[in-house]
Length: 435
Image 1 (tube, rainbow, N blue to C red):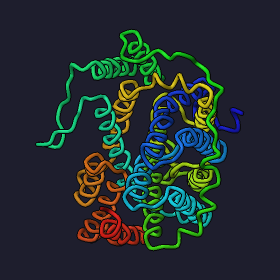
Image 2 (image 1 turned 120 degrees about the vertical axis):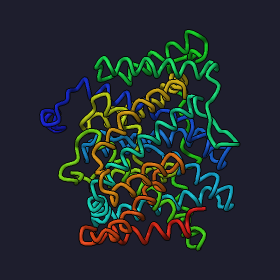
Image 3 (image 1 turned 60 degrees about the vertical axis):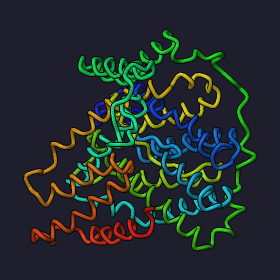
Image 4 (image 1 turned 30 degrees about the vertical axis):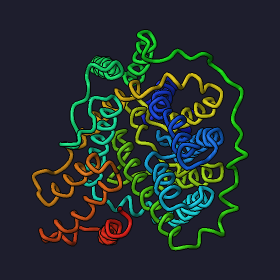
């Protein structure tokens, strides 16, 4: 197994991959609780239990395909943002039944598989210049650190200046601050699994002081049935041939394409897996993402995508696909150990996201800031992600400015033809798809 996952070449071990898998899983386990909340009876009107089971199984299948086929330490699960678009924009806003919306997710996944097999998705990723790849990694680092600060209550909404400092005397905020300090201390001491152990210490401290409820039981064999959602997407395919649904499918396609591209590039860059500005086995990684979306839609959940939280596992030492396999197995086990997930609160995950953000912004040092034509698109990519709360929009900003500044500098020959096509697509994205 160590030979299959290239342990020697990657300089990793079973122990590191296992700890990385646990760290990534704990960083993204919130989706098991959040996704049923958004897509369930309080959101899109789907069955809560069925969505929970579909979420766990879709994530497991995606992780296993990614780990075994693509051999990357990248985990997948139904994506945040896309599930909110599914529930609040499509089902509630457009009044499209959730059954039809699931069919839209299914079609977008099938189109992705075609684009992946044809090599188009891989060509696009490899055509992106190194400076923009570094800026995407740094931008995502700021973005997830911002999410961590928000979930910790350190940064809150301010009606006057948009954001401001939260109540630092709040119990959960103090717990998160404690977790940040502990995690940073462990990382400074050189503990590779510092992010994971920081989460464990924070969770235990939260239970000791009464801020996190101690689980009443550890195992539950009462797994919710998939019957209310399984296969519904296929029965609704006849209803997708409308202009309204075409827009929905295109949005699923667009956002997932570039969210996934950004995540793959960022995590692979952090793990040192990008070679000569190219992502090895990119086609396989993208196929894992596409296939997981089709499986997820079949089971009964919104678009399944690569998770930026995978970077927490990389920071814990994960380098091979085995860590993704461990994440997949943990998602399967989570069907039984769901009561334990209640201790993984936002106060526990926030420190991990913030520290991982610190690690990811190191990509800033690789950008050629002394070249203004490079600095401008890099700056807008990095800044737009946290400010617009969207990885895809941040990428759009940078990819629009890049050909403009390069042409003004007289370097149009250095621009890959695909980048011109992306320029047009992103302009159309802002004109027609962004509300």
